[in-house]
Image 1 (tube, rainbow, N blue to C red):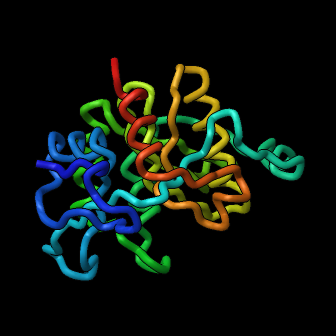
Image 2 (cartoon, rainbow, N blue to C red):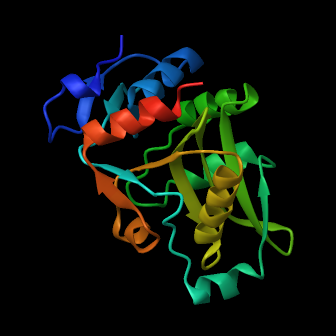
Length: 207
C-alpha cells in the first residue's frame, strides 16, 4: 500500500522503499503522488525508492517560457509523438550521463506502460535523426514528466514545447517535473508545497 504524502512530514522527499515495478504498482504510485528511482542503480537488483518531493516541481501549462532564440532553433526540427518510445527512454538513461538512474528494469517497466497506453514519448528529429526527446506517464489530465535527453542544442527544449502543446490541446491540467532544476526554471518550472501538489493531482486524475 502506497503512503499518503499528506501524512508525511514536510522536508522528506524519500517516502518509501521496496515494492515492484508492475503496471498496477506504478499507476497506484503516481495517483498517490509518488515516483520511483532505484536505491543503487549500479546493482542489477537494486530496491526501488519512492519519492514525493516537498516542494514539488511543476510547469504551469500557461507558463512555459519560450525564448525568441528557442523559437528560431525549433524551426530546424521535426517533432513527433510515440514513434520510438523505448529508444527515448534508453537515451535518457545513457550511462555516461551524471546521476544516471534509468536502469534496464525501469526501461522495461515504462515500455510496458507504453504498450498499455499509459506512457508517452515526444521525439525530436533533425534530418530524420533522433536528436532529442522526453517521456512520461499520463493519467486523465495529469502528466508526469520522467526524463529528457538531447544530442543537438535545444532539442530537449523543443520536445518540452511539443509536450506542452499536446497537453494544452487535450485538456490537461498538471505537468509534474519532480524537482525544479536550474535548467527547468529557465523554462518556467516552479516549486509548490507537496500538499498543494497532491490536491492539484487529485483534481487532475479525477475522470
